[in-house]
Length: 211
Image 1: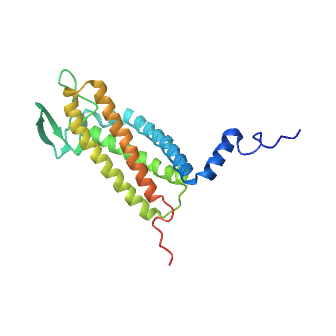
Image 2 (image 1 turned 180 degrees about the vertical axis):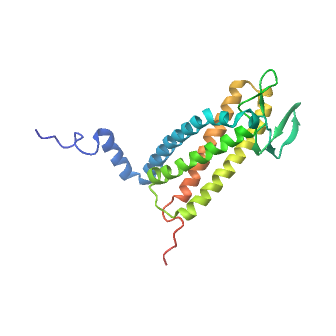
Image 3 (image 1 turned 30 degrees about the vertical axis):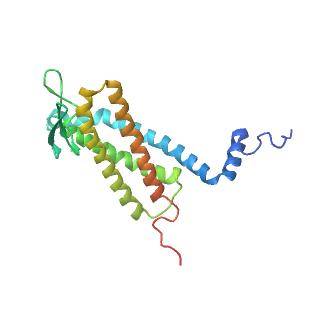
């Protein structure tokens, strides 16, 4: 039995043929859509991987490190009658209703967060490079820029959270607090890293220009 032309024998069916046609008519737009979609999928998979690490790692560091409220610059401010501690790096200890230290804060939590970030990005970087952007550029130039981006973005995010969490728990409803935290931690961070990846994984990045 022979298949009629144009019935999906080639090109992956109707959707495949539509995408092939769209890609040929709008190559730049199709590239952005494909890269953006894969970037989001991989980013969420890596986020889930980090989440799994955070399920157990803070507990491994124990209550001793959880009660160590190390942070930098550890500056105390009062805004609108609310006192909070500003930290670019580190977390205050987390206490229960009885004032006892519990897992989820302090130096132990800080170490767990950064270990999960490092391990997560060690997975994220090669996946985005290989599958999303299909890049084979010079790692010696890509990795340092990516590492600096990871450091700066996460320090800025931690600084924001130290202020936002300190104020928001007293000034806004929990629903608003959670929405803003999610948008900033997830959405904005994802956009920033997509831009970084588009730069360092661009064709010709880090390669000497031909004369």
